Amino acid sequence: MILVAGSANLDFVVRAPHIPAPGQTVLGQDFKTYPGGKGANQAVACAKAGAAATQMLLALGQDAYAEPLRRSLHAAKVQLNQVLAHDQPTGCAFICVADNADNAITVAPGANLCLQPHHLPDLAGFSHLLMQLEIPLATVTAYALAARAQGVKVVLNAAPAQPLPAELLDAVDLLIVNEGELAALVPHAGSLIVNLAQLAVGCVVVTLGQRGSLARLGNTFFVQTAFAVEAVDTTGAGDTFCGVLAAALDQGQSITQAMRQASAAAALACTRPGAQSSIPSTADVAALLAAQPDQPAEKLQALRAWCGLG
Image 1 (cartoon, rainbow, N blue to C red):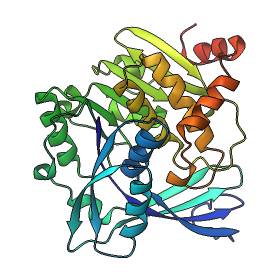
Image 2 (image 1 turned 135 degrees about the vertical axis):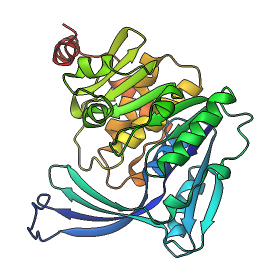
Image 3 (image 1 turned 180 degrees about the vertical axis):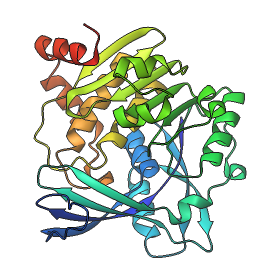
Image 4 (image 1 turned 90 degrees about the vertical axis):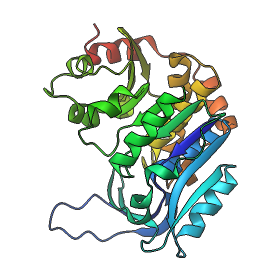
């Protein structure tokens, strides 16, 4: 069973021809609200696309924005451990999605900042604790140390990008980052392989967007090419990858098997609008895996070369 401790936000999404430059106003085409937040997205992905028994520790405001988040999590069969903030609104995110599927996101954390170390529930029965960085860093660190002490595997998606204390990284079993987040963690940023060599975490997975992903397990590297889909909105794709990766590991899959399943789920998430609303079912993921059973040799070699693996 997986415990996700993290953020829940209501996403306010505007589609536009392109993401505005500083000082520029762009006329949008469509506006909708969707349940989001890195923590809640990853919890839904664990339960829905990864088919893992999932609980979530989250903080919500006492306002109307909280209810769509509860409904979405309940619909995915995520069990909630709720902290109600008395003086903060439910977290919100303001997202512009461009016609090419890129996005720009600004988050108002609100109640997410109210999660404190003493809110962590009993970890008996949990195999993995999955976290992100949209709740206080001191809280993330305290939860990681508590999980490590109780033999629970700590999975950290170090997003949004920021430097992390050594005591937190020392407690992490699996670190998931994109290229920018990886560079923010190392003292001397360089190439992908150079940056990975500077991290002492035993297993690190780096998501590479439409190229795929790279994992370092000890001193061994693995690559997974991206699945071919027609993207319409990349919002939530990274969170889908993280949630499904953790779920697959919870179910005893190897890191390569977990990366393949997570990559398929993340690709499907790009074909639908929204964050949690775009997360596919396990049946959809299985269908894509069956339709594209093998990594094309040319793409695989090209990815290895791009990563600096020869």
